[in-house]
Image (cartoon, rainbow, N blue to C red):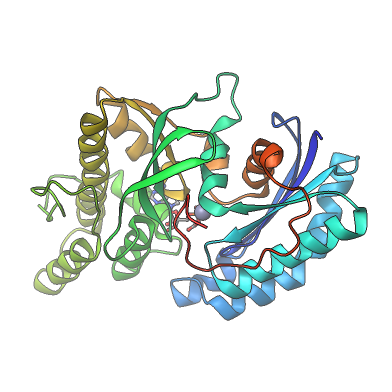
Length: 326
Ligand code: KG4
Ligand code: ZN
């Protein structure tokens, strides 16, 4: 089994890709719904699932044509994510596998993000720590061996990407907030304002981002003329500092320095630079691979194939599921 069709529809990107031998991307097509959700400042679940339904057939045809080959297995995200969106890709993938008489591999979205970093000449080797940072997740996961995951810490409220999206809205910057804030922050002073670093003085490996967002809200109410570039830079600095500090805390507790950083927020150059200034051995996926796509699901499907029964068509979508739990 070497060619896997990967399908990702857990949130607001429809991704379909064909990957060969877990190494070569034959096609990787992503239809972004950014323009659809931008007027609302965040993802509207019902609009997202309808849009996945509208475009998944054509996207799959495109991915198959570009790959110019057939699939020997189908992998699709089954958890976690928006229920309606998950159902579209999962059922589409199951139907394809059934019609083609090939195995179906259900994939946890965060495992897909982890495997997005395996597409390099020197893939990471186990064990490692994984920092998973996206619009829906902020988790530190200990990965001792393939397909064994132990969540050490997670967010107690907002996900870090969600806080970028919310703060961007406060600053009238376009959705998605992460890239907008990073762009504006380039001309700002990260030390102009001091925002709280959540969980700074605790022993916990959990994160918290809603206090930071509220602090930005209060600042903007108190100083409506504050320079938006300075606010963006100071917020970004605070958000990134807690990610780095808590990851360092976990690495020190475990005695391991290898950390894989992945998920949409890992596209941030500022985050990459901050990790490079630490003693940690931080590994990032290639930039286009950080955000949601079908190739990462195909890669995880390839890696997991040996361990599955091969015909797992009974799997249902699960909106909330910790990585490593079933
Ligand atoms: O992994 P992803 O594509 O979708 C989810 O699973 O959520 O991540 C999207 C999130 C959004 O919240 C977006 O604002 C954030 O990733 N993001 C960034 C950057 N690029 C995307 N956050 C900070 N800096 C960036 N450069
Ligand atoms: Zn994601």
